[in-house]
Amino acid sequence: MSGDPLTLAGRHVRLEPLSRAHVPGLVAAASEDLALYAWTPLPRDTAGMTRYVDTAVRGREQGTALPFATVRLADDKVIGSTRFFLIERWEWPAGHPNASRAGPDGCEIGYTWLAASAIRTAANTEAKLLMLGYAFESWRVHRVCFHTDMRNERSRNALARLGAVFEGTLRAHRLASDLIPRDSARFSIIAAEWPAVRQRLERRLAA
Image 1 (tube, rainbow, N blue to C red):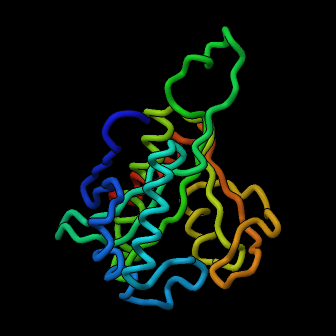
Image 2: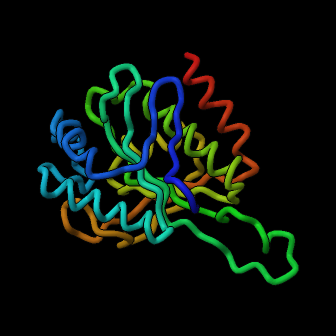
Image 3: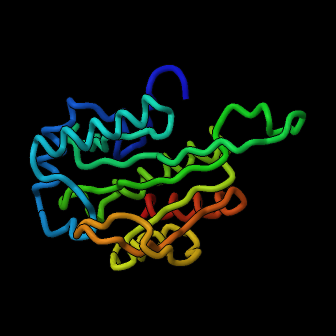
């Protein structure tokens, strides 16, 4: 994770390194439909969004996260954000073939949200294809995890359609948007499942 921050680009969206320059676009995107983020702790104003971005950027500087602004290529408009985080490097014993691997062993994809106008477009599908492709094919991770508020049916259904496997519920796992300890639904994709998930995502994009 050294060198220039990562940019991932497809035919519909570009995932570019998150920075304060994206704050006005993120505020505008979040403001399209405030009711959409009932289960997502998302700031609504410039000051809050600046703190949100600064926290994400600190994760990048510390090597624990890679946050992105999601930009629609058709009009170069910021339509949301997403990130890799909880990037793990396992303690392989000396001499093991994996001990010298350059990339991480596992990660989570989360903090994902889109403007109301980008929901049910190609944006989320392609963003997931770009991120999962990078994780499994460049980093060569063994596992990618996702967590969502157990009450967020739309997010749980989206992860299932993606091809992620539901692993169970983590009780009182994280702070919820309504400031209670939330139960999280945990999903994952492992390396052996990635080729089939890739085909599924590519078919959805083609359609």
